[in-house]
Amino acid sequence: MNESLGRRIKALRNANNLTQEQVADQIGISRQKYARIESGVNSITLDILSKVAAVFGVTVGDITRVLDEKTVVQYRMGEENGSSKKIFDMLNLFYANKHMYTKIQQKDTF
Image (cartoon, rainbow, N blue to C red; front, side, top):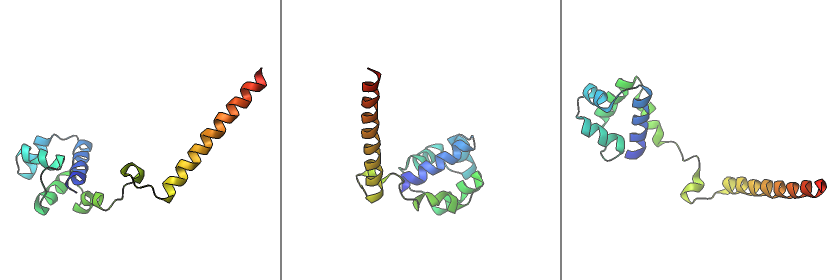
């Protein structure tokens, strides 16, 4: 959870072209503490989260929404659900057909 929030906060900081030092100064904490929040080592309090949101001109909900998002590519986590299996099956079929088509084309040129 901390890592997801940290990545979201870092992305917002980068989008606003701010340094860690600048954000830390604006919210009243040390750069080191802010860096630990971005890296997910430290938890973030609601007070600091609301200050961070104000600096970036977003709501707290805009930042915490990342916690509600599900992983888009679940197969990377070892969870192969029905839809990802269907996608892999279609890709395998596509490449098998492509390979067969290439072989047929090569025979026709000789």
